[in-house]
Image 1 (spheres, rainbow, N blue to C red):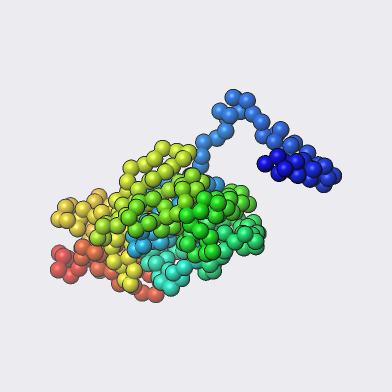
Image 2 (cartoon, helix red, strand yellow):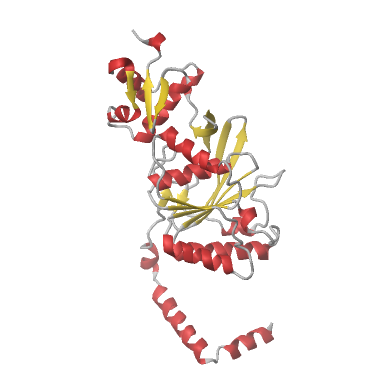
Length: 339
């Protein structure tokens, strides 16, 4: 060990190294604070209230087929459009989605979310390429960092970890530590939130591989599916209170699905106040039919996404009909229910 430090001391005698060391020393001096300065450090800001912290590392885990990518798609869409995520406020920002696997069908999921929520997709850039972010050469990390500097995304989604760490040993603390370091470099380039989609072991509920991943994570969310029900569990939230589990239901829409809160109207219970308002509005509309845009305008207290989700629930329970014309949706009262 002494030989190593002796060599480092010898290397530090070079003029270039001394200049770099002095520059770094000056930076460290500027970062020193007293107790008042420590207390003045602002609390974390959220991209998605309670769930995704700005400028942090986060993981979204779960077994294959447990809707991880559907949740990632939702979060990407909500951040890019500023749409609330299942009742939680969202800070609008640019999104870069690295599709390292499963390119086929992903566009359909984005289009389905857009139609179901009545919100056009914007500010999302896709990179359908399995980068090598654990490659010792660091070429892809450096190139991706430059890309982030050019495009300045607020949220970067990596889907999935297995495809960007090919050649690395998931169970090696060294290999996974280097992968976490690569993510930290990428995060630091533009203070982006880095959300990595990753698998669980077959008989466990933690992230697959070395514990270095969990140690490096600021946030860990876990997806667990039973039938058509999805539970999102917060396994770790380093810099904020951990929230209770979120329960969602997968509803088939066209050739894909959407995730939404459990709908009491589908179990014989009464409509929500918004659903009643939409039905009453259609009952008074000429021809008992109105466009989605008109119905949003008739609900001044509801966002476009909230109104479209309520209409989607009414359509599933056959309390309204829906037809599409071009890029517009029209909703109507079924003939049997008209006065």
